[in-house]
Length: 366
Ligand code: NCD
Image 1: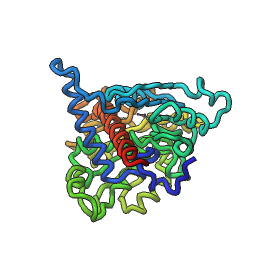
Image 2: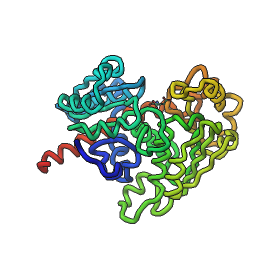
Image 3: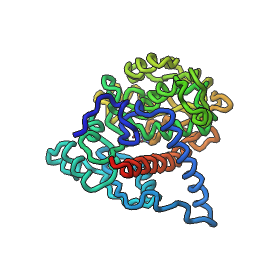
Image 4: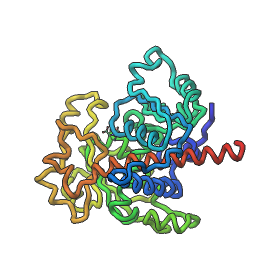
């Protein structure tokens, strides 16, 4: 078992558990690789160039994909990303029902077993704390592809760090830089792991130290010192953002506002990040009914968005709650499906970066 002191000290090239691990160099590295793959992906979709990828990027690697919770985009994009780069993929999307978890096996034993078969494990976890336990037990890198619901007491738990990567990459590409931005998070912020992971990441990038390479700063569209970003948390009181996140943002000097007013947020945000209410994580169904679908973007308020303001959503949109309605997900202001494509190329970039790191380690004999 590997011992971790603080998660921040675990290299994200080694294991990806929480966004507090990421630094600016790592973000720029993964994003630049994603740029490369995005160009390839675009070429590949034209009739003239159907080949596209250097399929030896992950040659010889067995990527094991093991999910304990439902997923569409995260699982498919990881599997396609790995295959595009020439890896072999073995997956289970129903670990709860069909793995030995059903027979009482601990996450440690399952992960130790899987790490005898694969070169990297991509896992979605159903229980708080499992991502860290898995990384400690594994003989190979573990990527947390989403862990349970939010836990305000453990800032490293219940995150979705690769979603935060693709969301930040989308904001960078669509708003032209990661400073002087106002980002509104709207909906069930209590249980949504995607918004929480992204909020931590904004804390992480707020202060840029003197020793960061100028090229990294230019690429990410940030400056030395403070970035002057602002986060708006728009939610009903009972599912507002956790105190852990606000404490983290305070410690990093990020300005934020906790509010219930969607109209004002739409008018000031560069990006508005919508969320469904996570009914599967709420015991009190009266509470759930009260908040589900309370905040929407539809034909009645989309005009409130500022001229260059964009709409984001990690998906899925719940077609009963209709937090995006009247087809606004297809509007020119929506980047919802750009996020989907970015998810593929960012995950390709991440896998390739982790592979290169591993190869260097082996060359150096460690
Ligand atoms: C999200 C998730 O699983 O956390 N989806 C995703 O990974 N793109 C959001 C959600 O479930 O609402």
